[in-house]
Length: 190
Image (cartoon, rainbow, N blue to C red; front, top):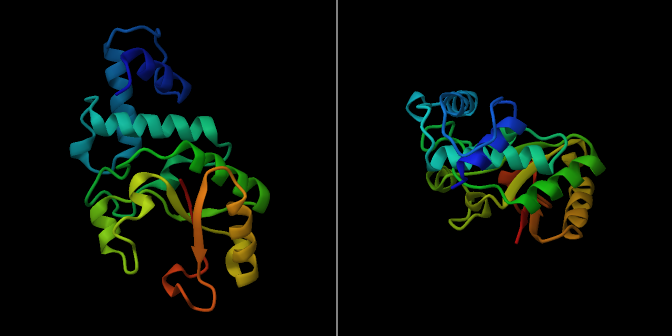
């Protein structure tokens, strides 16, 4: 877990904290925890103002999205369960995934993340999803944009992904081999 000094630094960079950066857990810091939770957690029980494991994951993710991307929001990566099974942010996003996705967005224009983080329960509910999906480890995303509307475009995006640092695997629906993917492209990192 982040130290109190790191929490204050991250929250300040994200606009949630305006106090002194030190190792004292003061009332202003506790209010910042609650504000962060209120902005991201859907379930009231998760918005308690207490800094625990879930809030630590949320804060690190929010900070890393801010630090490693120019045009993404953390909400784009939220688990698709809608808070039914998890907080919406069950795992840490891989920083190389974030960097690579930013490169894809810069090269091909706006992209939509159709699936980002997944909790195990949500992942297992999806037809065709691997029980060891990298989405559950913050290392995968399914993306869509105007380029991926055609098979040729999806192939172009996949070829580009394979050239990026720590690229692991990519696939999409070509010739109806993955119909559950529609026009989205799966990308993941090692």
